[in-house]
Image (cartoon, rainbow, N blue to C red; front, side, top):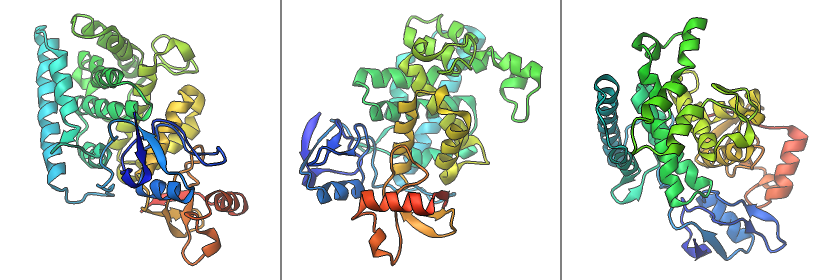
Length: 366
């Protein structure tokens, strides 16, 4: 951790502690990824120093794109490296399953982590994955996508560097049990019969047995493969575990797994995915997941949409200028020609007035 002056803050830095106003109100919660608008808001509160993590989360200078767009050179390099990594992962795991050949998990892990660093900086993987994964739905690409998301997510949660690597490995191998199932089932894209679903539900145990053959795979990674379909309210499988019986790494991978799966789902992919994720957690109930983890993930994901145009339920098109923790579908917005609701200047009073009197919320992202 390091203490940084407001003048030296950069978008993408992570708050290592709660940032408090002079009257001890929490302005920015711990683990929030800082954006230009958040930094401006800190200046308005006369806050001069912020304690941040040693490493940034990613480069926020690269904005999210919606739909298919031309990638810049860094994105193209990432896509090429991602596909090579996926092919390598495919070859290694296939040989392990079919020929019982050993493999070095650390080599695969280093290759995945290197994807986060292109040209010496951390790329905005969410910008690229939202586009890349919508056209690539193999189990290998899914595991790599979950590994990358788990790495960034673990930083948002304040995990140590060692724990970040463990979280990445947990994401990378969480679904390897799917490779043990008949290809007619593991590669099926339509609806499953009850018999097929019963077979699919064996993949956590199959993955655990596959990973248990290798000493290079840690117990934490094996257990995450076994429990990533458990839920905090005991509604998951294969054992119906709950709450403290589930490790923090599994709780993290649960959410990363859902997000990456939604990227592939054509009904909610690309820029709409974060809103679909919010709806998913609202519909399924937060009690199934670690609530703090869900809120941290949603808050940071939606911060990527700052300054993006959104359509409100009233039909108006407005800009998101900050994401309010706990009410992600009702963030402060800038209303054109409405000075008394310039939420950048009057955050607390304005959002209270806007939410309670008009009940506005985001309908879609443009």
